[in-house]
Length: 82
Image (cartoon, rainbow, N blue to C red; front, side, top):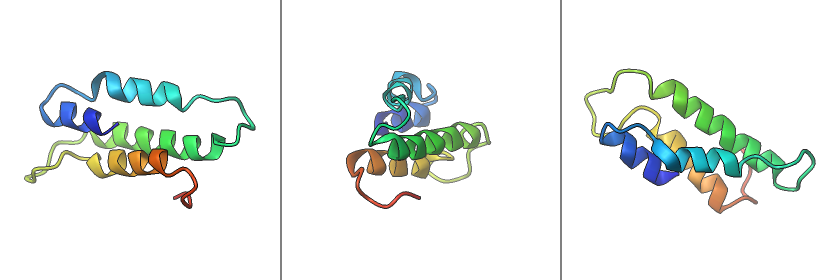
């Protein structure tokens, strides 16, 4: 997921890494990790909404923090959900 924000920062869009992350979030209902993956997918949805906005005068693209939060959740699935 974090590589998708690098692609986006270079003006290439989030690319394949974000597509792969979204596919990894698709699990059957009732799966033990379903709630965590639903939260990750929601963060990715928010990122897609924010990345359409014009970039601010900072070194970070809109929504990079959402990608970072989604990656954090993916790596620590037992952490409390946002």
